[in-house]
Length: 294
Image (cartoon, rainbow, N blue to C red; front, side, top):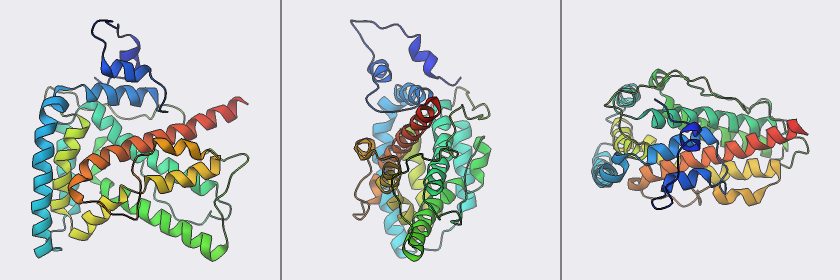
């Protein structure tokens, strides 16, 4: 069963024992889709996050350091993205909670919409190639989804800025932004697995998946993927410039893309990356709803 906003809206508050997650759900200081927020907060309250995450985070970071040493010796011997994504699919199907799977698939979907929104609002950028990823089932993960997501982000930034330099384009405020790329309804995902084994919260799953991701890719692929987690502010600046709301960037957490961070913290930064995408997409979606209402 996937828990959405109705779960928290119907939850009774005990004044003598208020819930941390219940309080955050009703707090609207950070823009966030209500259903996605409810899924994230319910998932954050799982026992696996309280008791298992501290253990898997230590073991996961130790594994990343050990694999880093291995990759220093044999950087390109292991390169099996298909095997990697079959492993990730197996883990998501059998162990990851419905809420975490929901948030993972949303991340690819929303990321594609944000990039397309930016392209649509840069005059002259129509010919920039795009590779939208809009999975509706966890089975779609097997199509190298995680790797393609990283490549899309880098290629978009490179192609957009080369066009800006070569063709004299400019990212600037749009008086009437084009919101065609941004969906406002519910994404029609297939039902997520919800057996008793699907107990892993999002953060614990990420900490487990990250060293697996590193093991099956070349050293360069994993280093590139780790550094991509600091590009949120870059994309945020583009969108905020178009919408003329730079103050909204305070909610984007992965900063300083020119200063690479150690790979052992990639799991935590990946969680922040997901949150930043949710926040940025909801900011754009809210602006679209307001424009349509006016």
